[in-house]
Figure 1 (cartoon, rainbow, N blue to C red):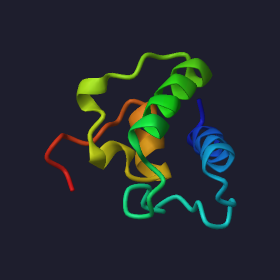
Figure 2 (figure 1 turned 180 degrees about the vertical axis):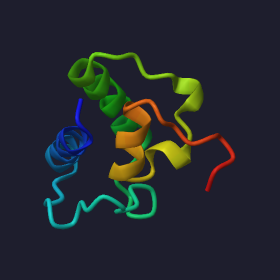
Figure 3 (figure 1 turned 60 degrees about the vertical axis):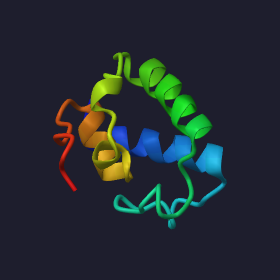
Length: 87
């Protein structure tokens, strides 16, 4: 799937689940620092992503660097996750 479509789908999920608007959810909006991610939201995202993108996410590589913002999430889903020790 095209990167812009992946980002758009992720942004749509985050808008629906968090109530934030599209202008706030830019590609590098930190989902941890801004309190969007909690354990339930991450589980909901995994469920959404696996259904939407048709691929099973590797939870072993689901580290903060890979899910901190929309840009990182889209790279992670597209198969280019950052190493565990990346910042």
